[in-house]
Image (cartoon, rainbow, N blue to C red; front, side):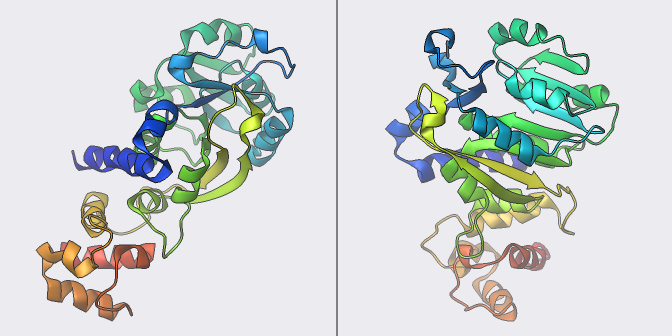
Length: 302
């Protein structure tokens, strides 16, 4: 399907943006897992290299995450990557119910030992958890997502939770700093990645996290990003058609839009650009999200 091709292509954009292939092949899959006590006893921490696990060791960062999450007693929360459960315990003390999905089976027993009455554990890969499973647990009620994501599933995860029928109302994610900045790009710096998120929601970086906040120390810095006001039908245009045109527009960044979108007719593209107040020689990153929608609406009729 079109959306699979679109979102899988975003991973390549992320890799190209954050560094060379050798760097990315080693570190793009870094995952940050909460530790169960903030003590400086590294022998107690056993991060799995093949999962790219890095344990958060800064309790001040944990408190900042809790603060920006602003969980209410009526909230239903889906936590992805609970690790050893420090954040999980804090969420359960504030939320009505928490569904924690953890891929590392060795961490499940420790999470079970928390004995939290409003916590449900699911040992699974979040990308293989069916929409119906989440909907059944939350009984169709509104829910929020809080996640520590392996960086190699960023684009797939965003696609799955922004476009799904049973989408969350908001998400609070820990991502690689550069990727978070890319998602929040404004006009003049837009990319397929930023438009793919902003088409459905409003992303905003909350704060950055330095490398020395983790053990082992990663090679990249991180960011906490909030994605709010998630709406599948935010704009009156078919998302498949919209992103087909956007991907063509960004196909060759050095080329002008009239060339990248020449399948729709160079004259028609120039007409759309001039009508919206742009130069006939404008490039993809110059357009606002709203103008991309107008462009797609016009070209989709051809």
